[in-house]
Image (tube, rainbow, N blue to C red):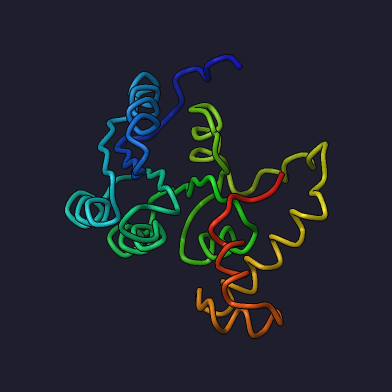
Length: 185
């Protein structure tokens, strides 16, 4: 994939990257700096919220699952501090329910890992009035559809495992094992 030419970032090219995968965080930070962003990084929800409140950036890329909590907390803190911030939620545990939750609280877009810098920039700079992207070549598998349904119910139950298990007529420990795994392809 070729690099995107220097994008028009506007008067404020500040970018906050929040991810607990240190290697990925450093690599993405370097790639974004090469494209003109002024990057600040955080490896936790706590550090991300501190930066979001103290120096709210124009752009942010925030991992959903962090060691000390949920990246959506950083999205909320940033949205409270700067309403015009363009926020992309990035995660290895992609689910429709979490994507909907992220967009509802103010994320601009949602990407599943692995995502390269060009995909992140396209998501950050996308015009909301543009046409929808082309549908995927490969639709979801039956296992993926099941997993998505479980994630949706889990989000509707405010991430309460016991209530989700009750509504799905599933044993709580079975549900915990499913939630701990990565999404099927």
